[in-house]
Image (cartoon, rainbow, N blue to C red):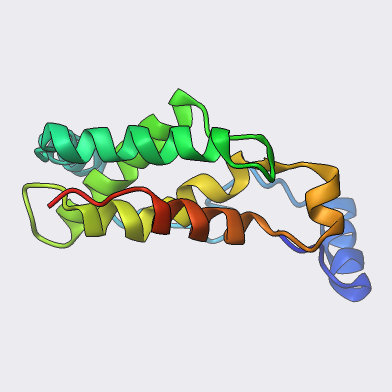
Length: 145
């Protein structure tokens, strides 16, 4: 996330100095838009979204390819692959489907993996970006059909 500009940062500190408590959601004007039961039901529905073993294997191969990328000092861990599984399932469910497609995986790979990759310092000096590594991985790993 980008840092706030000077004036915004000063307003943040002034609010805290005046007693703002970020844990007091009601005091901040935040109100519930759904119930805990609805959230539980949605989470259960997302977990029930089917993922074919070939699509599951695709997620594994994407994560492994980030670890083998020459520009990466640190690639995506199995925990990161699990996160891509979860976000892909949620995306499919939000799209009204009961199954995950490779397109779902591709749509969520960048936002799910981006912060999980650390570049080698020399790659950064050469202008390599995490997104360019992800572009290479997504274009190199065969998409299941």
